Image 1 (cartoon, rainbow, N blue to C red):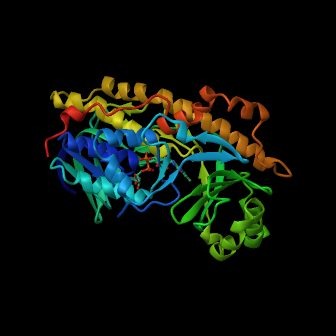
Image 2 (cartoon, rainbow, N blue to C red):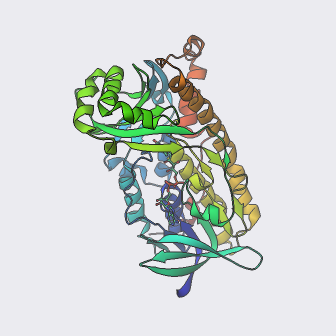
Image 3 (cartoon, rainbow, N blue to C red):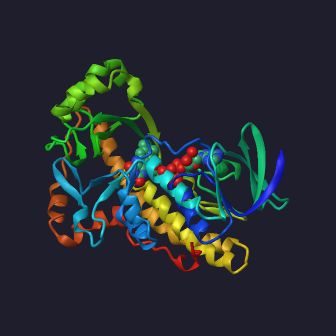
Length: 411
Ligand SMILES: Cc1cc2nc3c(=O)[nH]c(=O)nc-3n(C[C@H](O)[C@H](O)[C@H](O)COP(=O)(O)OP(=O)(O)OC[C@H]3O[C@@H](n4cnc5c(N)ncnc54)[C@H](O)[C@@H]3O)c2cc1C
């Protein structure tokens, strides 16, 4: 075991929550170590959406321009069954769209920017294995595996940003309460053609038994197909050709591309997703944020943004305390949960209701085409009601702001 180093904040996990928190702390001159188990930031099947609420934050700290110069694709509305459910264009923001940007590009950009700060360090291929605790159970640091060796680092605060399967959550003996039903999803990509006017929109489509959620990307579609839990083996038995035909029933133009692209079931990822939440996001010396504290499902494509808003509120609360030369106590950690939990609860409730609707559709014998109830279509004609879904998805309800700019070190 190597001799223990010491930092003010140690962040376990370099996903959206960990990388944004690391960036803000580094820019404020807080000694920060980010430990990421992956060798790079290449992520698949975890979504790639950045909404207006996070772009506004990046704008306020001078990063939005550079982020929007990175390769991305903009989505301006989401529809279901031909009805526009969420129109981002009506938002009062400089960013009335969803930015679809590969996480590898976004997270590598943040890593590159953060490395400019002398107080910031990131280690890749560094898998956090254990919490270091004192006799009273307070967290004092972590042990992580790097190059086959265990390394110890002491930290004033450990922030677990290690995602939905959080190892540190288990290490701390914390258990998620389930808040949504289990969804089973088939996830794949199909090439996109610039001339695809008819399907060049994002949203839900169905024509046969299964609903497909289609997200438009620069040169491909990212497609999620929600299935009835427990039926994947039956779908596989019907054969990949039957699945191509199912895609064709929803979007005839995509069937030949499915035949060319999805040659075997290996070309399709099978994912289980269940939303959950911790009752308490912290303990002495330990805070959990992002999916480690509250697992978000893909419904609404918001989890990355909720993780980033958690990171920003974490910086808002802890930077002034650390800059004052004080220790982070449980009151401060509780304040972070108080600031973030209401919005998270609200969105997880929406995910539960929307997830149940999807399950109803896939569980019905014949499969039903998406039909937005007439009452909802009528309600969406009122501007006040029409603005609720884009505000909830794009801004998280109430806007989160970065409050630590006055601590940024002069570069
Ligand atoms: C199928 C699917 C589709 C989704 N689609 C979308 C979408 O379109 N838009 C959206 O906003 N959200 C989407 N989400 C939700 C979103 O992916 C998560 O909410 C979001 O990534 C959470 O960010 P995070 O930083 O908390 O965790 P993560 O993004 O999971 O990052 C955790 C990081 O910790 C690292 N790590 C794990 N264990 C350790 C360890 N022991 N030591 C060190 N590092 C570790 C991992 O390698 C990873 O980099 C989707 C989720 C799923 C499952």
